[in-house]
Length: 164
Image 1 (tube, one colour):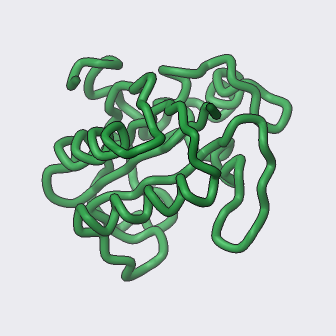
Image 2: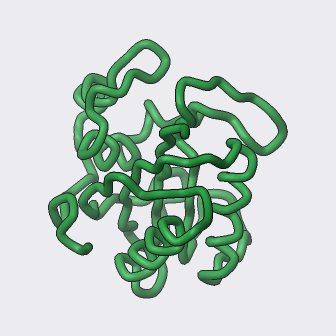
């Protein structure tokens, strides 16, 4: 079993409901068990800022799947929930990102873990800090990375586990 973290985000339709459905689909998948779920956070858009606000969350999973298969599962869940890839950093009904996969460092076509920009994004770090504050990524803990960034544009909607 490998512990991995998945970041989830949505800024179209029933944002929180779509994230909850994605988490349920992850947990129902063969070889994957959700072991922790962050609270939901309202976050400002990043990259392309002329769009609606996001709901973001993170989950920890235990998985027997290899990293590539976990990514493929995430992409299949996105497709099942109606994700259309139209523009980079644009509006999306759902987004799932593999943030880390055990202690592995992977850099291959379409898959880089730890996620290359997670330490620069409070919308990833705030929910991840809910469930794995002491996790060390690239030499720094999630909590310390979040403290350095601050929490501008990130607001808690609910505590961890409240929507389960």
